Length: 155
Image 1: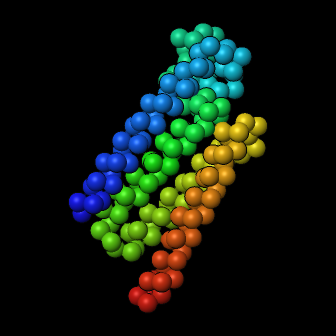
Image 2: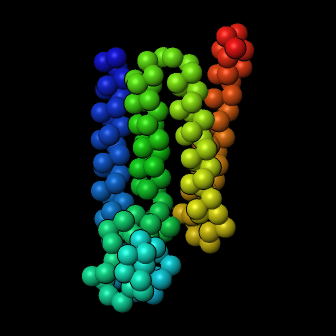
């Protein structure tokens, strides 16, 4: 239990650090008004057409960073997924059914998330698409392996 808590704390530190760096890198969006139409989806949902930098929502910084500087957003995303798995393993306390359901939902969520960046023309969008597909396949595959290994004996 102590080891799981330490892992959660370390993953939280990595997540917060990478989120701060991503936020900083994404703030370059303010200087690139030609990119507002393509990299400010949250601002457009809230304000309609973005006319000035004061209308840009902070979440759009992460979108811009993920599109054009994907290293730290990918680190943030990866540490978040691992944090969800670590907290999930603490909450399920080694029960295979709970872990299997968590992995299955996580896999489906990763598939859905990856298709948000399907056919992206930027490097970051392509990285997030392929990472989401690979991580989703791994999560769903792990859930299926758990079912094959443990589920057939009890069902």
